[in-house]
Every structure is written in C-alpha cells, then in structure tokens.
Image 1 (spheres, rainbow, N blue to C red):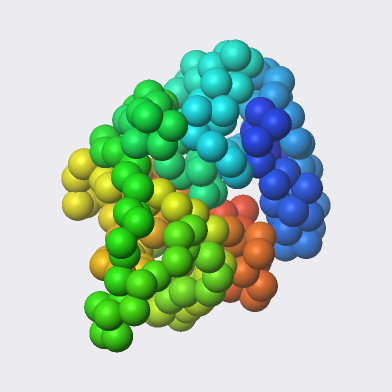
Image 2 (image 1 turned 90 degrees about the vertical axis):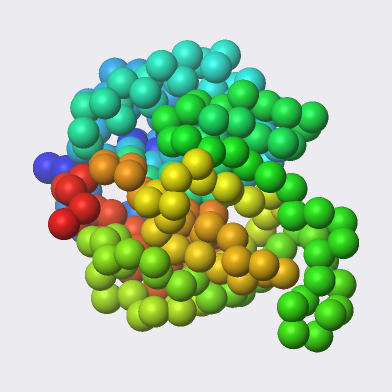
Length: 217
C-alpha cells in the first residue's frame, strides 16, 4: 500500500492538504507527521507551509526536519512543496529581514514590493497576491498531466520565488510581472499556489503526485 507523509511542523494547512490527498488517493495511507522514521519510510512526501518564513524555518530546524527533508530528497522519492513549503526549498528568503532556508534548490525568495502595478491598466496591485490566477506551464512534466495550459489556481502570498537557474521553472504567473509559480528539479516539484484550495485542477495535481514516481519524463 502506498503512503504519503504530510510534514507537520505546526505551520501548514495540514487538514486541508490531507483531506485533498484522501479524496484522490483511494487505498493510500496519509500520515500527518513530524516523525523522521515515518517521513523517510513514506513513498511520497508533501511539504506544506503557511505563515512567516522565520517561524516556518525555526520550527523545521527545532524539530530536526531540515536534515530529514534533505535525506528524503537524496533518496530520490517524490517530494511536493506547497506555498511556503516551496519557498523553504530555496537558499534564502527576504522575509523577516532575511532567513536562511533549506538550500535544496538554488535561488532566493523576494518581496513583491509596495508599488506593484498592473502592466495593462497601471492600477496599483494589492499585496498579498490573493485569489485565482492563471498558471502557465513552462515545461512538460507528469505533474501537469490532464491540467490545461493557463488553468487557474488559488494564491495567497506576498513573496515570490526567484530561482537561481531558469531550468528550474516549471510554471509562471503574471502579477505585475511574470514570476515563477512552480519549480521542478529531479524528484522535487513545488508550487506557490494552494492546490487544496483550487478545486478540480488542484485535486488533479494531487492525483498526479500520487502517481508520480519522481522521474521527469
């Protein structure tokens, strides 16, 4: 029987993520856990996240989960980062006057800015970026299977990921400018939006994750 560990460090919308996985994962065992052995034994891992990066990384490190996440990624099994869970995979974040992150992927997390404007109308855009927006797939990937180009997903964030390598960009979204809304490298895939709040296409993404073996072809 397949198993998925949803990493619990006290900062994610864990119930919603677990419920979405249960809905699309018949016969799949879902563990919401901070236990290292359970995480490392899982067939797949979800790293969620909501809140300030300083608090998220502080709890990840306090619980020793930074080392566990690195070990799991090195095993080659699939890992899915969601929202702050995506940002935590980078090297650092500008949030909270600068926070060192996990460094699994090259790049940094930057603030949208207080003077962000719509490129077409010139109107000032609200921060955080909140609500539905299009996600433009930049690469072919098993995680995008059956999801239409420019499908809309639900976002809530004030900071965005700036990958250190353009090859990492799996999708982009426009909000004042084009920013990276999904990244991919080997057995790691991560998104800025919330699949569990994104209705049909969000559930499709979780279903694809439960079928994905960690290979990108």
